[in-house]
Image (cartoon, rainbow, N blue to C red; front, side, top):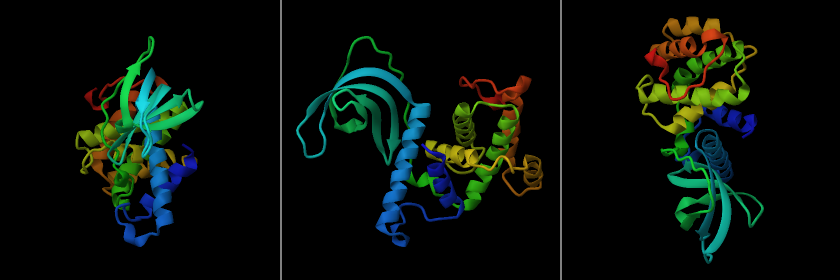
Amino acid sequence: MENSIAFEIAQRALDGKSKIPVYQRRNEEIIRRELSLLFQLSARVGRDLFPCKCELEIEYQREFQEPETRQITAESVFMFSRQAYLEAFCHYRQKRRTFKLDRMLSTRVVGESKYVSYPLTVLEVSDFFVHPKTWGDYRRPCSILVRKMMDVSVPKAERFRFIFEFAARSLSRGVWADSFTDGKAAGVAFLALNTDVINFNWQAEVGRIRGGRFDQAAFTETLKSIDHFGLRGRFRPINGADPSSV
């Protein structure tokens, strides 16, 4: 997932563009492009948060075709528009492919493989296209979190996972008023990671939030997270710990 893709998704949300189900305002080409970008985003979430490692032999039936037996190396799973997908290396095609789980007629684990499974929740397509005021409540505290992570030199590869898990926990505990979904948490993470951190004045943003312009509970949660994970000058691995519990 390139930052340009994430930025385009985030920018449309910040500009208050319509949610994807409202097709009347956009032509088919724009809708097709948005769906493609969101599919890539959902796959990125799967690679970062739902990895697996397993050698499988599957019987797979593509649409309107006869079933085929494939040897694959499973890599990650993700959800998009209420369907589950598996990203894997296909040994027959000698390239990485995406398989729909409901088209796998049978599966068999081959050899000694380690498989890591995660509970999957639906990544709703429209979660990434919400009112800009809502994104503001999400984005400002998360942008402060990004700035502070930069200050303590958190490796770039760890930032998406950290912000995603922070946002997911905050949403699931009702810190933000909207209902919790993985899609919203992923959207928050990408919005925050595309903040112009070089010119981002987080002290000024703290003042604006404290002045009541943004969600107070979200800001308080951010500060707790910074205090917890910023100990000793570095953010510590999350390992399922609740940042508000310390």
